[in-house]
Length: 422
Ligand SMILES: O=C(O)C(=O)C[C@]1(C(=O)O)C=C[C@@H](O)C=C1
Image 1 (cartoon, rainbow, N blue to C red):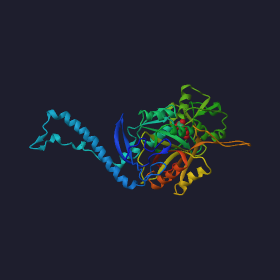
Image 2 (image 1 turned 135 degrees about the vertical axis):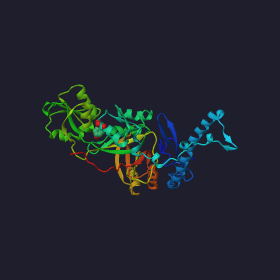
Image 3 (image 1 turned 30 degrees about the vertical axis):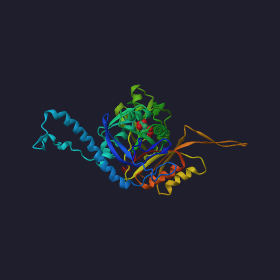
Image 4 (image 1 turned 180 degrees about the vertical axis):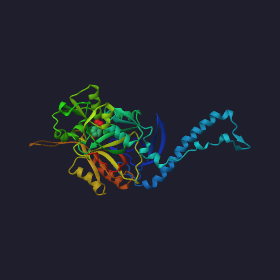
């Protein structure tokens, strides 16, 4: 067995997929879980020297008992230290039996880790510091609260800052939007997921209900401009036109920031598209309520952490990967069919330019030069990395890819559907 960090993949090839044990480490302000991965070269694929294990069932018991052993070691080492510190002024035995001073107090007896210590359950929100992009009143703040109730939400001015806040231990998690049902993907975050080494540990879907906000007393006839986050502008595009507003649209960093800007600068010719909470926070009136073009307007956010969670099979899981495929005919088809053959549904596919190699010359004949664009493909599929079919699918995918990374395997958001209010 060999400890590998980061646990899923490093660079070009998939190194290890199945966490087999875990230990706890105390870092500044929080407890983190460190994983030990089974590295099985005996069954190895000749190209890679390893095999995507299928022993998760057997290993689960192993890693659970390892958890308990490791946890008790941490506590007993602390006990040793305390004991040697107190040795000089304590009587340690009475008639050969340990004195009461030697007994470990009940509340110090190490407790085995339970499954809830390893799960990203929403109750873990209290005391967590969660970074989001925007200012208070932004939808991302609401998403952070939905993902981690009672968390301390930390506003960040850029997505990149939210990633760094987690990497630098200023925050424990980041909650960032990746796609909206009307506006589509938030590409910046896909690119940042690849550039940074954080792990997706969960997802949360937030119904987004937009309002048109303006200073008290402002009427729609006064307006020459509507400002908001580009996603919010695109989600309300048709409604703004239908309302007969003859306004310029201007993009700003976030919806609540737009409301704050109007209030701070006393702008009577400008309205913001933002939440009702932003209206309350920045003292604006709601001119129109529910201006999203579709009442089922939902934004999907991902929760990011420094460590991955242990994938499970007792609830619906999703796995997110990113890959670049090899050259050749129908290679993308072959990659995707690895999932189809195993009855694994793909829920999302997104392509982004392959920044290290954006163009490939495929044909340089006397008729001219054919150039293909190169892409990074982001795929979400409905399976847990603890499932053998998912491990086998990725083993197959790896044969057709020059780069493959598992971004995370995490519980699907299964909260009941509540469309945004009409
Ligand atoms: O500006 C905000 O309030 C955000 O939280 C950002 C954001 C986004 O990036 O998509 C989040 C949800 C809505 O889709 C609109 C904007």
